[in-house]
Length: 212
Image 1 (tube, rainbow, N blue to C red):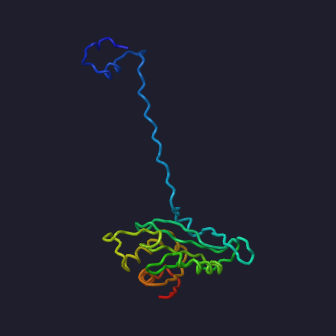
Image 2 (image 1 turned 180 degrees about the horizontal axis):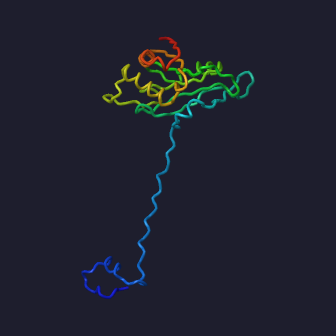
Image 3 (image 1 turned 135 degrees about the vertical axis):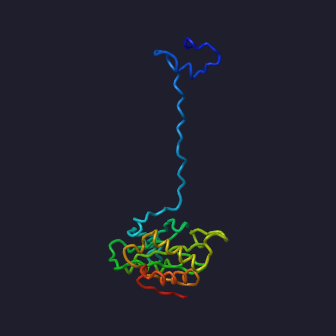
């Protein structure tokens, strides 16, 4: 529809449309296409701090040579969390369903340089059977945890490892309710854990070293 009084070529379509009397139909602007969120890429489960203190038991099936049957055996789950600017992978193992828990009952295992959290899997199982909740992170530069590039803020020295481990403990809330027991083995990364225990004794109840 053309509105009277706006016959000159200089009048814009928008101006002409706004000056039309009532009753003149205006073309609706085309609807904007709906933007859909990008597909979710599933990766390691990032654990919220509130869910760490009470994880559920993890079991695996192994073949029993005597019975010839697959049996359910207590094990650990692998979780992920971001702390101190690093993405951490760590093992979590808790007592079996219905088992009595030790009080206080949390232990953190810190491996030495060149090793990973899986190093402790057998010992963790024994501790779980004794009623302990067990946590073992892959230290930075190892396993599934971030491996910062040389020259970054993370210097791969005792101070960096100590600060990173404290950030991990704080973010996961492992020592939020009570100090935890510390088990270390090997050198460098584990030594950094001992330095953290000396600097922050409120985080730890007691400590022990293996092959250190």
